[in-house]
Image 1: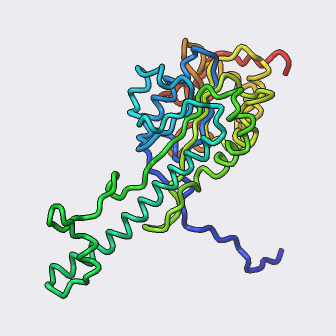
Image 2 (image 1 turned 30 degrees about the vertical axis):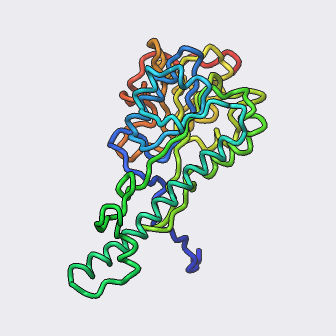
Length: 307
């Protein structure tokens, strides 16, 4: 075998841009949370969002404001709540907000470069550029002021949640926009300063079923998922579909065994992390706090009857 000098070069960039604590998933995320009404989807997602320590969360749901007891855990800005799920421009509005965050980030860091130049001139008693004097002098306070940014120059860690949206115009007529956002979620809010790249936005989908004929989660969204939260389902067919898409590294029998173990208690669920960190012993967990390996499960698998 003769080799030539055309090796693949890997760019020195991170697929996941934000640091998360040891046992948390990597970020950015694209999560599907599947469970029947009253299963505990909202509580599970709110807890995960809180632990992920997002700076800003966009919540798309007609029921968000009626769940204030739960939602108060997240301190979401009222202007970041979108209740009209038949408004197909909602993804455009959210993307515009992300782009504005990127613009403010770049503007702050450009001003900080000038500000450091101004301070250097000021400290060395050099002649200060008139443009810099005008840039940082506030006539109201009669003082020179440092540029401000609501996160002190940190990149905003953002997430968007779609809750109770199945069957809406947003997920039927607006499906193309939902899909586009899913495909590009890590690249939203491109920036030029401090290494460039993009702010990105994690996406969360709360649904009562894995697939529906109309107004459901588009296939392109499911294919781009990084994690799934699966509550107990009464549908053998649905469980089989989930196994076929995310079972991956384990046999069908072992997947059912893991699923049965994870969902055996009231409101418990199976968490599947498709991109686990290297230190995670398994991509499967019971809820968020118990890793599952096949040897830990005692119940025998019970595959769907129509498998």
